[in-house]
Length: 568
Image (cartoon, helix red, strand yellow):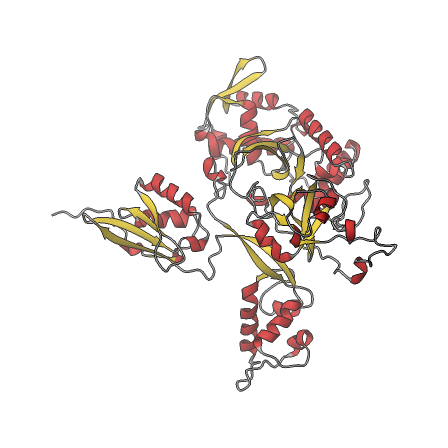
């Protein structure tokens, strides 16, 4: 559903009454989970109207900028992966093998042969209805990797004889909804699962057959009154804060303010965000602009911390803007009763001129922010465990750090070469004190030592951006001459950097105003970009500034025009 980019039609912050209605819907949809755990009372909730690549309209609900739920056609609320990671027991689970994850990330549905049975007989796939929401996890990790709907009921799945679709996937790890807010991206949390044993599958006809099944829920039972133990720190803090009364919150806040007098007041935070909005966006404001839209789209995004107008002395936005009008920053006109618009901004105001703000260079606006520039790549990783930490720390890797599968053998080879552990005659590795703890007192080949080390590490997957340039060929720019002595710029090895060619072509056509196309060369894996004219410098600037490709990875800049015409 979200495998390809979707189009954002509108974005609006929910009012208090609308947030209460959404919380009530969550209570009806998921009665076994407290609504405060899913959507804290003080959180900023945003409703996004989107149009998927397949033409399907949907609503996405974000809590503090992170997508937490989305709607299906019938209005059914579906939790995202971020909700499943913070509240794991919100949905039942089906388990699949780790090798299936790359297939699912490419858009495939979960097929029955890839489902690990929950029991035997009619209990093999649990007791679920057709169309019921199901989360999917892996045999070596209980954290969810996707969510979907059952294609058939559990009884029908059992009668299929192990063939057909089990779950129609709606949302997957690595899709565009997971990557909606780049600053809040998370990898799959690593939660170990208990290995399956013979006790999990009782013999046919035994008394335990209908009672003893593997629990599909990957977490321990939790009570409703307590926050979930698997939730991340931020969710625990917000849910805990929502459960406190106003008196309990105000007293510690007063003590904290007394202990740290330098901490900015809510009024200072609000005004600094207001000044930053004018400083960074003053010339781009589409005046006249509704005051509510100005606050929501510009002021809130510039705030260093969450702003609560009720905690300020203004209590309302209109009171704050009235003071800003009195100080001469803006001019506000009342269009109709209750509808105010900003009609002009004084960018030469002394306080605004002297105000210093950090320019957010990493943020992009408009359509460019919605358009992905890079392909995401799912990589197999080995996680440094406690057992292997002593070895990898000597090679500058920390405990819990992920290492690509192909990199582990290079690290072992580097360690063996650095300490001179290889026998020049037999080519066998003699373990030192560190390797003795991992491999025991035995010699082996480099591949055998690597295999022993990886067997004691956790296997996982991580979604990586195409911005990683390690081990990739250099981008080659060259010039060619076509009929009529016309110059053509040729660029090779672009796709190796994960760059989406369709978006690059669009940028070239807009920026260089030149015909741009893709040429497939024989006996080569990657395609070649062809731009009319000598566009070497433009391509170089586009790759280094927009795509952040390191200059050392680009060859051929010396062919660019110097921009000076020679006099005869």
